[in-house]
Amino acid sequence: MKRILVLCTGNSCRSQMAEGYLKFYTQSGAEIRSAGLESHGVNPYAVKVMEEDSIDITGQHSKPIDVFRGQHFDYLVTVCDEAGQKILKGISYDEKIHFSIPDPATFRGEAEQKLDEFRRVREMVKKRMLKFIGKALQENSEAAA
Image 1 (cartoon, rainbow, N blue to C red):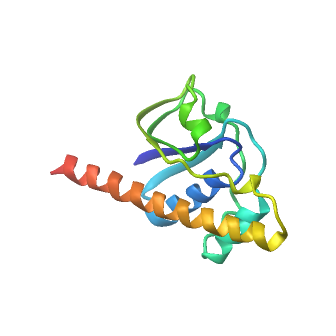
Image 2 (image 1 turned 30 degrees about the vertical axis):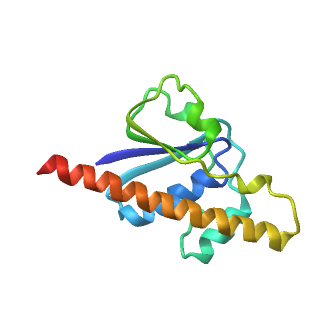
């Protein structure tokens, strides 16, 4: 079973959404984890917009990258530029995939505007995770052939 770690800055929005989509779309065919360079707690707007897309992330928890020290992953998926540029110590992986996705938590505006921004970012995360799954599955099927 492939092990995938999704990493962003605070493990509150983008990586949580990515973890939710990867778990849903891989149907337990991979071990999916997420973490942040820091742990900021799961953002309630992220929970809400994922629920709107029938993905439940209420059981997920924000974790700092250090909890995975000493572990190996088949894929490291970074969903923000800060995490993409970070040199990780104590974590190994076979392949790194980077997606530059804006942080919806930094958006300033009224509640409905914030929700719209989270929805916009959710759709970006969804598309990129589907792209990643397609690439990873294609590589796996080519390796098996």
